[in-house]
Length: 332
Image 1: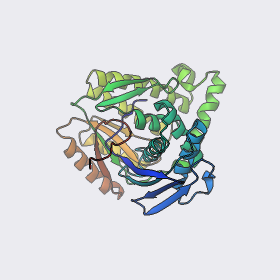
Image 2: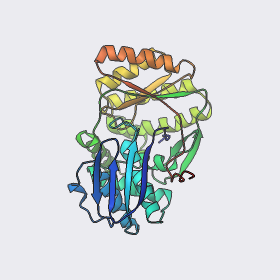
Image 3: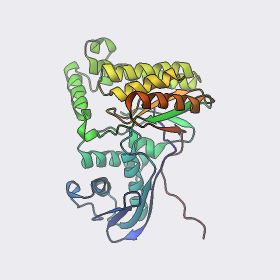
Image 4: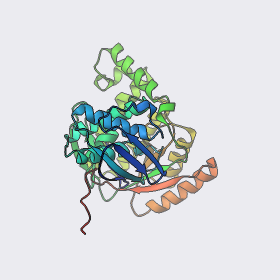
């Protein structure tokens, strides 16, 4: 995988308490759960509180002392966009809980606990990319992540490449999508081929299977994209993004008509390439372009997209920033 942490934040301000009580300033809602992780996640209301309860439970299983906190929560990560709003929430809550208990696991342990919390809260068997990126992000760098070993290799993002995330105006919900179905199908195919995972298959082995063909070719494209970034080759990176989107659309079948239109309009307006981001089924596309015309490209593409679909897009010009961590108290 080749993600980077973007300059959007979920912030938690907390002090010690008897239970874990979190109030969302954005939604005006409060959730309260037991500090020892014993609250049944499935019964927590409002629904976003299930992420909080699940994080408390997963950290308790990891050995976190049962320390409570009273907290306020605010986020500018857009919901349902494919920009990892749930991971931002999980990681921010986890770091606040760890600080409240004066206990801190390793970055890999924290990310793994948050990934498990997401699955507990939603029932969707997601991967660790979002949580690990939220914890381990580096300013100015993308992260080449090996999901098997969790090895991370920083890949500098050139100042000659601008990155745009454009929300299609169609929210996505993984629990209501075919995400889990795709994962089960890939696992079944790996067993049929006799390999630990589809990353271990050769392209010839999966040439007649669309899902396998996508996974194997996508792993190759990730490595080639890291090389393109290292070579400051925006044109090659753009081509790889377009190949990736075509594979996600045609072989993995996780795109939507709106995402396809948005990718096409960005390229027609001058972007070097674009693809859907996140798990698909709505949300955002990510595009790369030359920095100087980036704003004009975004304006032209979104105007045409709006005309063609009737949807209202939102543009985020993204830069790579450091991952999550405690915020020092303000002086005074």
